[in-house]
Length: 129
Image (cartoon, rainbow, N blue to C red; front, side, top):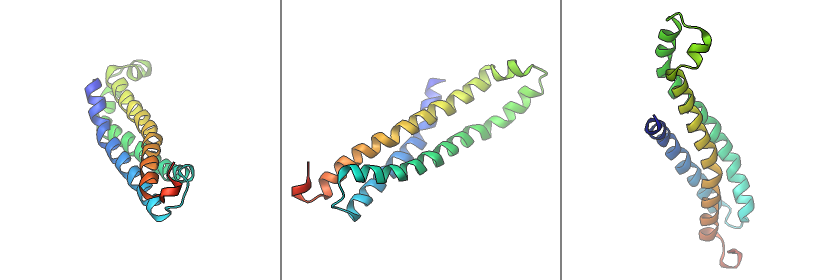
């Protein structure tokens, strides 16, 4: 199950981090005199949109294929408690949760590293610290 969770989230995680790093790099190139902390804050405003979009995408990507499973389980005559705590449902919830946590953590880390590297690359020599 753990491998499935990790593999399922890697595609979205890759997309978010590459897109976020690209946004930081472009912000830095367009405003080369921008201090690193302002570059980071500007990029994080973009990153919040990346997070929101990707979390919704990830939840829908896992929820869509799970709908037939939910229908079958709900028609089985089991109680709501049994359905919610079943392995099948718990696995889908866990996949979404782990993927979302990874996405939320990856954007600030990616933004900080990209801001540092882009600032060093695009800043005039006297502003590099």
